Picture 1 (spheres, rainbow, N blue to C red):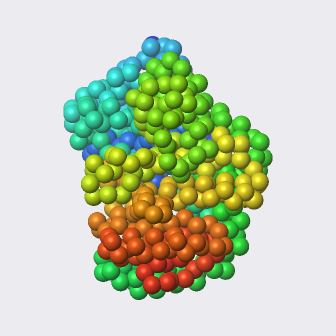
Picture 2: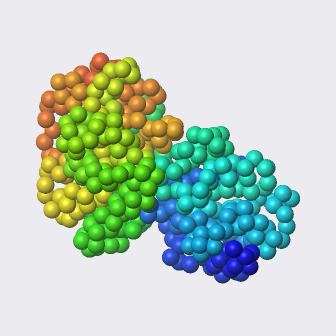
Picture 3: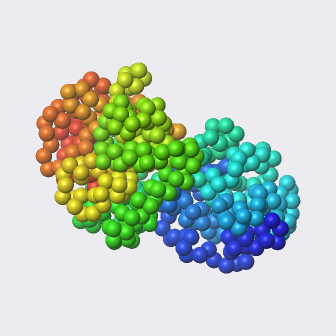
Length: 481
């Protein structure tokens, strides 16, 4: 492909070079929490990787980062954006080295090995570039003043690069659908100082766990709830919608459940065929689809590997592989039995969760308001939402490569065990008016046996402290995350 043709394509992707604004379709005034985290990562030398499900807003976030750089005074020509799946470049056979050489010769007009200031190279949908990990390693190791920011549509494509060529050279941020508090920020239900108030609650939560004293958490939580109480009706209206349609940004303004359902099914097909089937060369995608339907309908339940493999007419190792593929596409996640012993954890069946309620409901044919009247289905959705938010809370409080949320079962099952400061906190999901005493007794026993600092029951309306068990309404608990 000729250099002048490459320049033409690059100019179309980078209108700021000519003083033109970023198109409104590619940016948004609303900035989710990921923006602020990744903006800080731009100051580091490592390659910055943004991964997550398709259509979760990665491209918009990238353009928000670009706008922020421009607003801070960075020379527009020091910022290059390129979607790797650009049809014209692929059809013309342009390689990344040719694109960067053209950028150096025609745009910044200096060699890349003598740059005095950082130049930002945003490469969207990096998985479409063959051997991308080796190519970026070579560029990174040259030591030029280049900051690579890459995005990918699932960890399937990124994991190989980080485990092999780019180990120690890449900082990965996982971008998931919007959590509930972000929905409320978008709808302007929450105030500008909400993040500060939430941070105080999280800090008090850690302190209470550390000190084995509930008073700090309880007092801060009461203050937090007092500030939110006047907006409770608005919050619960949005919560009902969130339980039905989930947190994908494209559904924020969509009112038609039929259209949302169609979009969910299209999204799943895209993930299956562009990510999982293509990468792992699955011969029978129908089995993968059937498995996902089973997981969606039974989200939050135990999965018997032997029975499920028999039902799908596949071998158990194949089923385990399929579960791993779906997890790498950020569609599902497992919860293991809580035990200090790794052997004890392996012997128990995992519980599996579909992470986004809209995805779960769309696949299970419950993507409408009838869900809110079905106590059984609603219980499944609430538990799945709690699992997702607890995973995020765990990461916020104790960042690590893999957040784990466990479950416990003795006489009765406890839905979740969250470990903070190496102390287990039992958490039960009971989105109903009545709380069975046997569940409370099981939490009491767990607290005594494991020396837990407190237990939590997530309720529909009840906000009360009984001994070491704190009962918190769902709408409050989700806002702690």
